[in-house]
Image (cartoon, rainbow, N blue to C red; front, side, top):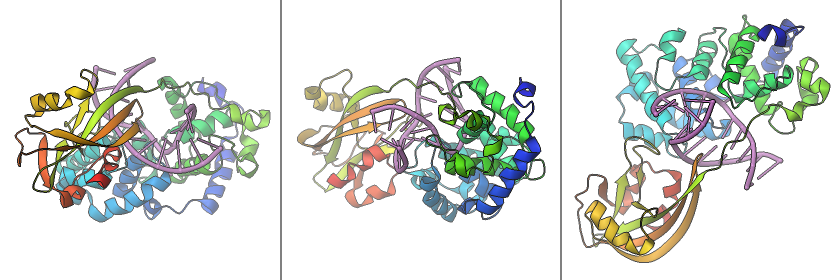
Length: 355
DNA sequence: AATCCGGGGAG
DNA sequence: CTCCCAGGATT
């Protein structure tokens, strides 16, 4: 299969054109300042399913707060989540800290440079493993992400569905055969840059592509038709009432989310799902579930928030309580001014302005 | 092999 | 609106 795909493909010519282009035009990115494996690691985790422009400010802030593996290992998880606030996929942050603690405990704080130990760390999958091994340790390991599959599906005119797991293995094999043994670090990063700036998902600028003479899809004029990707099914919709609860002491009540699942360990304003009850039973349901008596006073907003796999419809209500303390473990009474100390998902940050 | 897990921006 | 982004863990 691989032999067939790579038949008559000029590997060394492709490598040379790609690398020469990269040496001249590579993007100036903060994690390319040096090859510190910790910085490479943090950047690769942040960049999972996340655009470069989004990551840059988070990367600076994160490295300022946690400059070394030891700083991150010793940090409070809530502080790590606060540094991740708004970036999404929060298990990345929790897994990264878990893995860093393992590196400190098992490897004396030195990030392992072999595939077995590196790939065993929490949150380090096939892509990230290859990225760290190649970028930080100069090892010729493939790092297959969306860019790599898009670029090589066009260059080699591969029409397999890139949404399927087995297709990713095909591209790992392909990349393992094409990657430069002289400069694997630059090679992998060059494919990323090419995918981000030239070989883009829509309207690729093939005229400016350094490897267009090696591209089979371009030669056939079908680059816009690749890669093939099956569509994801659409999200499920869930209605909620969300409460901004205020007490007589000018305080508000927030809730810590469960330690597993969606937005784990982040904070929110108490939410009541309207899947089993109707809106006029919210006060009773809340008293039964949280042991707190509240009175809904005013409708503040209606927020629609879309996740990868579901959609929240939040009817935001202002509520009052006569209580000054709470008894449910999940709830916490805080001063209005202290709300900024807690990590909130973006969906709930939109509610802060009503405080 | 499917599903879960966030949020943003380009078009 | 749709797509998809330097994906991984869980089932």
